[in-house]
Image (cartoon, rainbow, N blue to C red):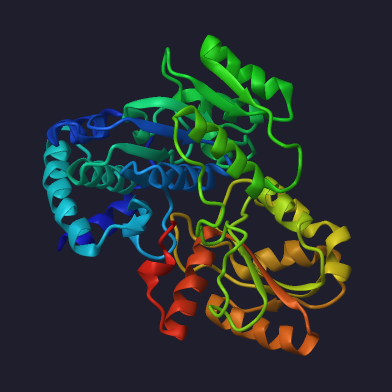
Length: 406
């Protein structure tokens, strides 16, 4: 199989926390992650957004900056950005070839090759090193301790919010998840935490970080986008950087996305996929809307979508609901019929089920014109990717330009 096929095949190795494989892999590459300082960001919600803002701030200052985030929406290359731009496929493939050769050697020595995530992280580190980046902004994968990104040379660590997500891996309480996220802490390196509402969560982090802990109070408002912008601004000032641009392009998360003309109807598309994210998104809806929803499988599905199933949102807010399924992702999609049973528990009408997300969007566009209202899409980040890819192809746009952050 070619290198791309090999990398995609690594997805079936699953998630496997631990540093032995990635340490060995990076060692064979002469530890490129040590060639630049990094800001290391963990959290349940908002960590990718904060990373994008920090990348913007560094670039605005003239700092050559690498940005590593996961997951990708459409193409695997978008996990690796330099100065806000996704690296080109040829460069990605050149680094992938190097990574594959080293990963095969790791497999011979340890009995198992690095995972898909570890390989893409290694590609990013190699790309950043060879491109001469002066600073990297690194988003963790799931938790903190045991995540491949813990090997970066961090001079600042940040935790955004702590919520109940990936409970099958990180623990089933916020305190347990907080301890897992706090695993990014290094002794003597500042750890800045967005203040959690629960003092017991903060105490769990403080027990690990000790005197290195700093707390960002936040604005106490429901506009997380503005909150992350301000948080990033504080961090930027501490490094002597310019402020980030408020109008960065972060599909499925930024308030200025999608841009005018990408879709045929007035539409909101959010990658909110857990309880906290969905609650925040729902609170921002002010007018009746057509809802399109699709999620991937998770251990606490009913708890994750509890806000969507609450009676207070339904007949007054959601004129129609279309239930669909994302077409890609690390986890398989929740079956549309199963999701519909949960979502429609508080409704009197029948569910509209269309498993193809593109067809689901097209149905929503027709309904929105008939009902003279907008469309709200919520759920998996992979659903966002499905619709972004379709819309760019439909309008004849440049996908790489739509994936540029700043």
